[in-house]
Image (tube, rainbow, N blue to C red; front, top):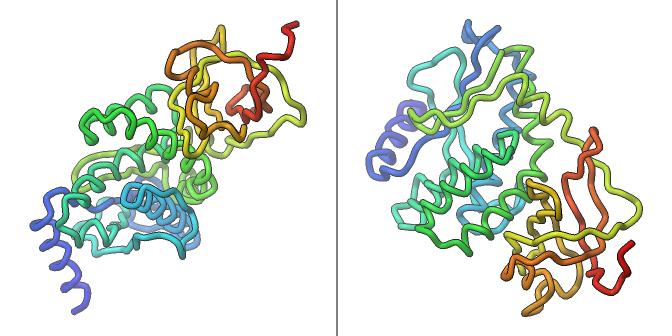
Length: 291
């Protein structure tokens, strides 16, 4: 009875590793209420969730963002569902459930908020929730928290197509998808969430402009950062591609350290509404006269 042995194995791991919580994908409403789901839609959705879970797990375990399945250090597997609510799929990340090491406990604690952020609409409030969760797990190590935040955001952008696949049954075979970590409710995704990801297409300007703003959450190993433009109240995602970004005391690091505005040249990336959602910074502009 392979299924029975798998269930016993999961139960034993949960008993031995208190931090382990299986990821529960619950499809609610429409056909799912009768414990049915269109198989094509289910397959597409599971592929999307598997990519998100695997990429997030790889990040919190290795610290390295990657989407390539053959490069992942984790394996996402389906496990038996003890009791169905509407229509459920259970999944676990094998390296976390099988390990009793301290790093596995930390990785397990980081995994849920990371996945929740990737699957969210990524508002300012949701970013603060992720930041608070990471700060708590990392015991106030702000440098590590800031670096992980910028890496998670970059990975989240790259995983948009996978999230769209994960949410594909919404409005069709089901009304919404609920994500649980064990018994803990993590995320609720409905038509509004699905529409937000469907509309998340951007366009990069073909010319550069001069901007002034304060750099924050600057990762000197990748150039990923945040920018608060002068006169704005919300930060914008950015990436510095200026070759000096990794040099000590470069202008971007000094702006972050002193919280002083710096002028720079960048190409902006806008969404369908014309709102700037990202800046690609390739040089400072202190020598360019202001107009």
